[in-house]
Image 1 (cartoon, rainbow, N blue to C red):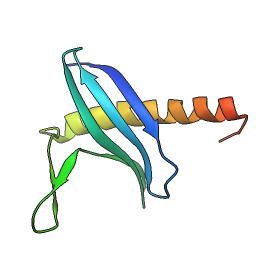
Image 2: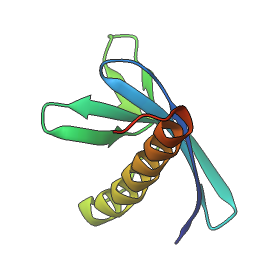
Image 3: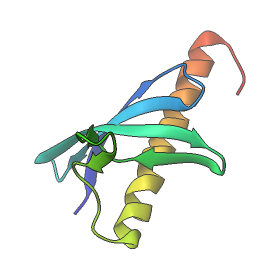
Image 4: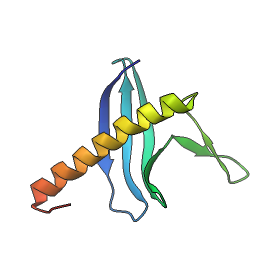
Length: 94
């Protein structure tokens, strides 16, 4: 499996830094990933829905930690690249 496209939509929120969509093998899209600033740095939250009891349940997610780490690494790299691109266009150093 290969991530063939990553789209990043930056946000100017304190914790929610961006939304992301990924395409797998040019055949399957997962939308609604969130890039969040946590206590230990940025991380990727999988798409989720709110349950009737107020908790959230992932709609799509990696089955194991290796796949999660692989996916998160690529999404965060794309996020950093998009931040740098937007900063350069605005003439701001990050």
